[in-house]
Image (cartoon, rainbow, N blue to C red; front, side, top):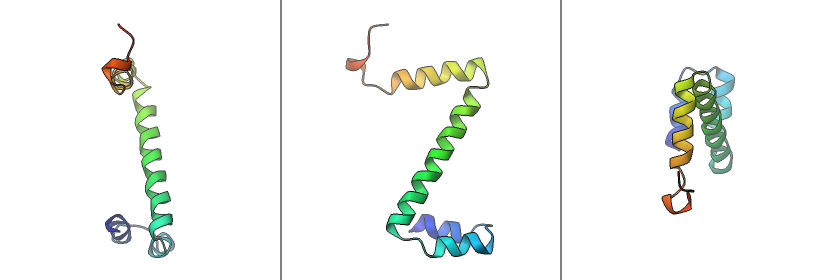
Amino acid sequence: ESYRVEQLSSRLSDKEKEWWRHQRTHGLGQAVRSASQQAELKYLSERLETTGGIAKLKRLIRNSFPAEYRPPA
């Protein structure tokens, strides 16, 4: 609910604010998931632009699995 209030107090257009006013649990959950997915995709696309970013992504992905499930390096 606090995320919804934050959106209402931001610099959104009147139409966007009206949409946020009507959101509750289900719609809010979908909106937060969508925003999170968009942020993740933006992060990935920015990292894929540089060699260092690609290396960092590989490390993050490799380290996201528990050590017991990772193949020996």
